[in-house]
Image (cartoon, rainbow, N blue to C red; front, side, top):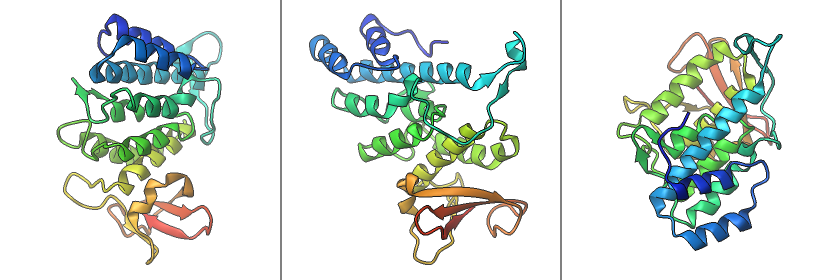
Length: 243
């Protein structure tokens, strides 16, 4: 489903991006020769991310028989699927920054960060978010009221109970780490997670690939007493933060 109607130039850029092996030299040549505005580049990129999500959704659901409604999400940790267009999303957005991509632009309810959160191809979305933050994305950007992070935090808290699709939850938590690392707060101004190790700084979580997480019952000392999310340093294995 299209998020909005693309013009001819935007549609062509979308089509060049949405392939399994994008030719970045060809894409640069197209952009150099057709003078797309920053808004046109950004709208095409948002639609590209939506197309990636649709492709992923069709890939990760397995079916019994011919009835797609009986599909069951694949329950496994996040791994990079090289045969999906989303595998190149971070590289594509990095290239588009030099052609006017607008990290904080919002069109209706659609934005780059809101659409990135639907990408569950390993940690591509978190990598792309970190890159956008490094290039001016506001932690409250994407909506007028910080709703992107509020929704993300809610999903991290409640999707743990419906982890039939483990890869999607893994990707979601890594996006959440990037937001927390850039200072995202809960709607009431509280920190969304507590540093557990005395020498740990929450902004280190922006380097999300250096950390992994686990879930536990109770004992979190945080906002919920019945469960906990534990974040560990991948090198030392020390627990560094806890939700």
